[in-house]
Length: 274
Length: 288
Image (tube, rainbow over all chains, first blue to last red; front, side, top):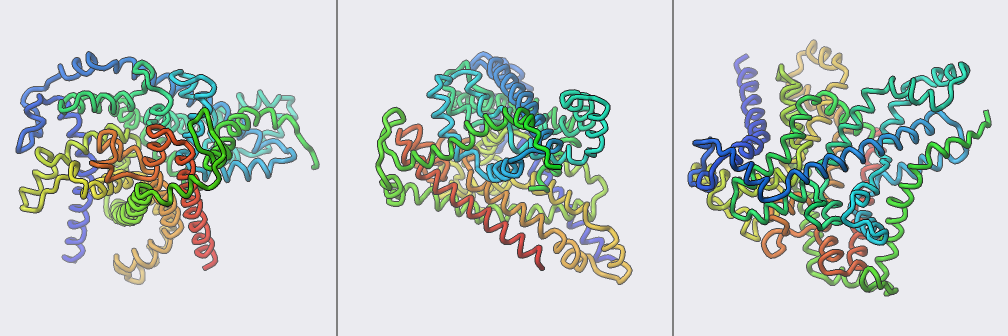
């Protein structure tokens, strides 16, 4: 009996150590962003600032156009999410409910494209965008991401669970495909669409390599690129870097805490399928 | 039943157009460019020269070596820790959702932002990590500025970041194990250890194989975390360079897109091979 107890205690200790390691960088980031410069570089390190330096945030906004970065990020993440969701929704509907020649081929091509790493095509896409004269534009930032095979595949499995008899019944009642999509399919898979939307928005928010390639003007930067440029420019002013990092992370973290169940469930469902 | 609803193509049109332009075309283009030299606006045929170039380039081999080492160390270690934590949460803890939420945080947050925090925690002089190490009289290396430490630092950050996804997927798999297995095992007086190795682990094998592939593919693509840790560079003196770093550098900074694309094709083949290997593995497991 005593041995089992010891095992439980030991497990809890391990769990808490790792939970602490996971959370600590976030706490340190928030606290460090409120320290003064001496505190961030003191030995031994300061954990809790003596006085909360809220002015760090004013300085960050004064030094770099973070407001603009926010606007750019929200805009591009929203546009990619809405349009790619719309396109994958239509595609998934066709793949699930319609019969047509070439369906198998399409499915096979899509599945093999899922294996192509984004990093392998991002540079040639840069080439395309440059040729179209779309560097440093919002269109250039979003264009390659206006559809997602991954989300289409995900929605297919979601729509597949909605019985095809419902589709047939709707057709007999004289509904058009368009009616069926918006009046039956979308309302019935609201939670799935919402989760996909959330995941897409988060990955849009955190995107880095693509915007780094296609923008070099400060006014067109997204948050993460602005943040990394700021981190180089602010050089030794650690407290400002941490304040800027907090600005980038906090909105998503709040979104995450509100919708944690949907997000986690969505990721699990997404990926079990592979 | 031989209906052919041509309207399907209408619904698929946006996806097909975008996929053709931004997924299929770039693959073919990358392949083509890997046989061309010159700048982006003036490409000429050069045969296998780009491949010859990268295979003779020590920097390329360093990038591949770093990427492989990173994958081979961070993936199994990260996965082992994840299995341990997922099992503890599943088996022993009441507030499962609380821990799941906590451990998943790094998955949704920006690598760049957290990388900046890690750069600071890892700082050789005033970083929190070295403060703790010195407190217990362990060596306190210069994690960021010592070229010999670059890869270790990248690996630690990589493991930290990988736990989130792994734990959540493993928890999903653990929940799917038929609870009757455990009830029966309890009836026969099986120990916790027995239950873990004889019921849990075999049931987790497909999930672990899946995570292994996902993690390895992710590891081959490592870029952003290195960029964040070392402030835009690949460690001091390029000591922590990775495959994608090499490609980016050759493409954007040096301006030899052909060389970059040759490296891309090689990386792509490695990833494809890893995926293929996993498929084979899964099939074998399925047969048993």
